[in-house]
Picture 1 (cartoon, rainbow, N blue to C red):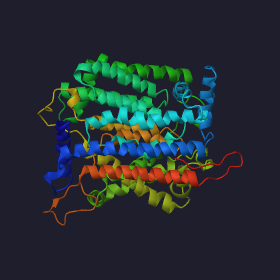
Picture 2 (cartoon, rainbow, N blue to C red):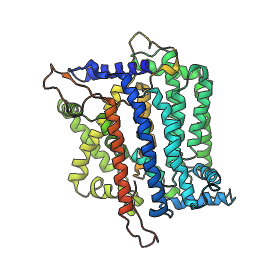
Picture 3 (cartoon, helix red, strand yellow):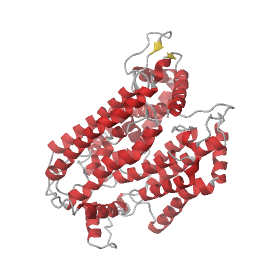
Length: 524
């Protein structure tokens, strides 16, 4: 652990020095050992508190607020009840995802029904996501990633991610689709030379199972395969500063180690291709309302959500000053970029009928009042700069966390498990491409589609060491550094602020629909 953190620190320090002529205080990296101890204690203290909060609110919401099927639950619950009745061949054509959730719901029901006879069938089915999100996710998935780099992110924080936490109260596919694909990533990152083959098959199996909950996870399966091949190639082929050569080395290594690193994942791709041929579409049902297209503005929606939710990780006056200086020094380029964004807004914005018809989602109000406003001043001259800054954040926050190489000397490690859990220029490119391939084809503006793009971005970035407000007076001053622990605590509080506010609105702001017998509420 200390060796990995030291490598990470060197990468960060090098990039920070490149970004500015100011010196970074070497005490920076402050006492890494204390940071790790603080991280462990912070998780141990916060976890029972957060678990109690979510348990109390889960019981209250499911028993008092919405003891009835809510929005898409009528499809998911209905299909699961069909399975519980023993009818495994009857399928609701309105359902767009494979039956992973319904099989898991069937299993969960038979486990818990004998012990919780007073709970309704709906509550027991919702328990699938609560147990998954509050127990399986932080303890068995995020903890494995945490031990690889304890100062990068906290399990208790990531389990509270607002877009994810919303579905701990409902019977939706998002929670377990996320758990299985991130479990695949965790297994891949923690593999070592002695168990490499076994780890790759397990990682592939988990990724394949995740596709039974959401088909687009096949894209993230490809990303995990790139990570697996890359981490091995870094050592075996000795990556250096020649980026194009590294791509060639990665390709050659994928051929050399095909059976160990590629074949397990390739089976998933073959099975998915067979599914596409059989189904004639990536969407399982209701194809007319979920046809793929070129919805480029989704990229900016996604980056904006990532920017907002990750603010405690990167925000500082110095970061904002760098963006300002970048816009001034590259003024013409910035104007061109803003014009390109405006063209994307104008010609590549899809307005799905569901978006304008369903006021039970925050996207309805965001689009109607801001994003899709009839005022050109808001739609173009407000949103374009926001999208521009969001894109800058997405790219620049991860840049200091990128794993860099020496022009000649190899990394001083021989074991795959010792490779820092960071992206290289190859996997960074793969991350961007996978994010685009996942969200751009979707005609719907739904924040839950950004859950995986956020997680796969967040687990590979490091918190900024820069204080939020403190800046040097002149170029001779040394930039003070801040504790990573403080930023990670702030990130947890930031997530929970969103969770508490959205839950308050959900509980206290119901409204009626003429064609629905129960009160309607707002969720992400």
